[in-house]
Length: 205
Image 1 (cartoon, one colour):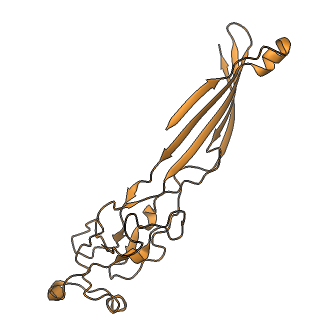
Image 2: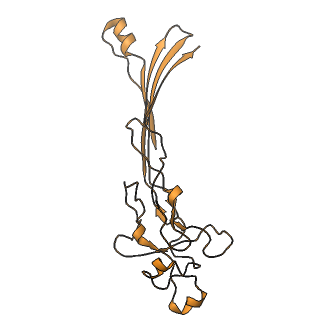
Image 3: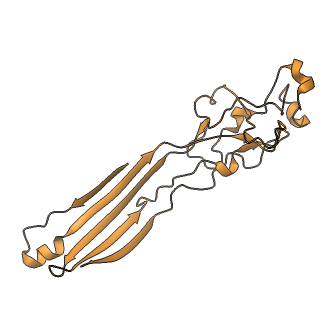
């Protein structure tokens, strides 16, 4: 984060009127840049039968495109790479202890075990980064020695840059039976508002 206030120098030309019109200005700003926040992807329901344990993780694949942070930056409709996650699996020798996924899923992925926690891990993905710039412009009027008036124009997110939130409303990728959740990995909110402008008049006495 970087913030500043710059009081512009009063010019020495234009006479008293020029100094009055061009003097007393201030510029201010706050620039914020940060990486995204970690979040988890989960399986809905309670597949492990733990009485509502909040962390039933899927399995994470390690193939091409699935290493590092498996997301599609800038894609709000498919932010999470869903092809990098599957239902948990276990060796065939554990089949008697496993609750298999739905037949349509089990036919494609051998040895599914929905009551086993996957290896995706808590907070293993990173959400979108944040970039924001607020700008302000002040004009100070000296009415008398004891009375001053300040006009303020303030611009929040002046470049109207969209800063997206992690897909926290859509971080369940699979249903309890291993079938895909509709809209999984979709971003539906932002961390900052769109551009806002406000004007104010401040009297100091």
